[in-house]
Length: 238
Image (cartoon, rainbow, N blue to C red; front, top):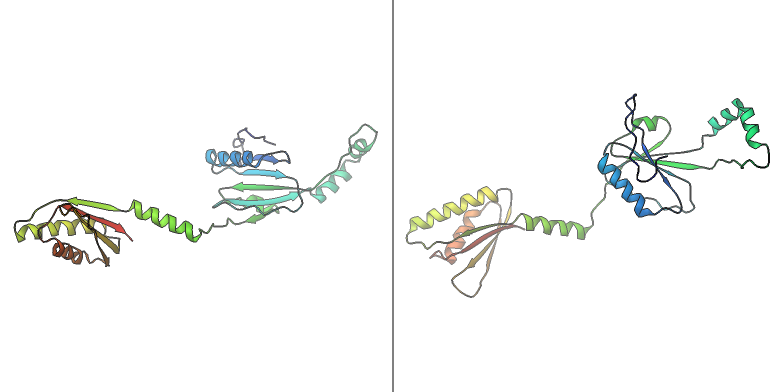
């Protein structure tokens, strides 16, 4: 049995890996077991970890981790116990005679083998296999992930110009459209923030566009600021 802090055994001559075993006791700490298991799978991703434990009353079901295969088997094997007793009567009689010999008795136990890959050899030996349960995110967690994704996917285009002719307006519009098609091509909901820097009032105009209608947004931009004030055009995903 491998104790906490030891490294799992290497692959033998047969090519099979001896699993790292961890005994679960009443005086052990859950934090220590979890830390040891996480460290084991971080260093040896494809090597199994066997949790050897005795039964307890009113055991709560353990939560399954994502993509973690679980194979359970129990003991002792009553058939092998009977065969060993019949085949070695002298050993059994020697173990039961005398007052100074410790009383020997077998109790039920369970071994839970955790691994990042499937172990079909254990299933063929009679162990039960549990598929990994995929954790479903709550509504609030999905909202937090969406806000984080939106913050990371925001792009800001800074420009400043004062147009003197229609040619410069068309040229600037062409540049903005090109940038929008390059950066925001997969984005269907676009928000335009027009923040002029010369009005001193900090006004903010927001336009919501559906689909790739970038030209409509630029036309609204030029309608509000025909003289082409210095400002910024910010693109964020809704």
